[in-house]
Image 1 (cartoon, rainbow, N blue to C red):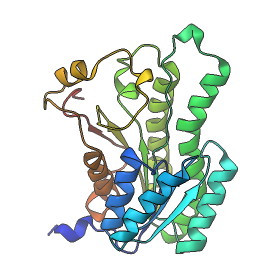
Image 2: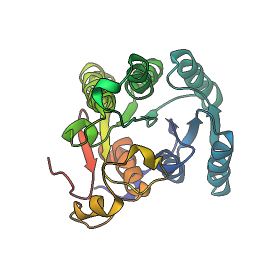
Image 3: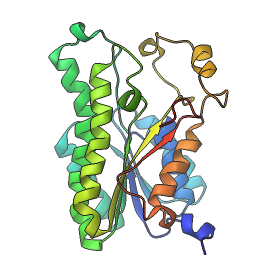
Length: 256
């Protein structure tokens, strides 16, 4: 019989990238509240990481903040090594870092294309590649990539690199799920819809907040904790038989 214990992460170690604010922070705080030791990550904003770490410790959680550029495979490998050295394992990884640019296709430079793919798709690959050997040793692992509606609906023009990266991230999750299922490693995608976060609104000039809400059957933006809940399910014993799948958390905006 499933109880609330089926959603606990006691004894697990989780690394969440891009977790100084917004969705990543919500996932880190949720995992810590469920009993996991968490490693939080950011690229430049040490103050945001410190604030998140302080909030987790204030609730009795164990946390390690690590400043690292996830578009650099060496930095990711070092971060995973530090996680294992500090907490003795790495059981769960959530690849949450992402950048997007609003740019007409013919205006995209090769450098901008590479930048978006490295920060989204390549970063997810680097994290999984570094973590999986440790997971195989324990015969346990949970990998989550944070995609988005761009990768499944293609509803926004002028975002070609992001569309390509986001659908590629789910392809990566499916490949991992197939190859490492025998090692009790699952890999899944969480695809947020319109979520109320702090963001650079210059990259969202195509629609107003009111226009977005008008397309959501639930009539509101989602909350970061609702994304964290999906990640908790996939990481917990309750979600142990789910792999290679997408959970769309979008208020019914798109129904697949």
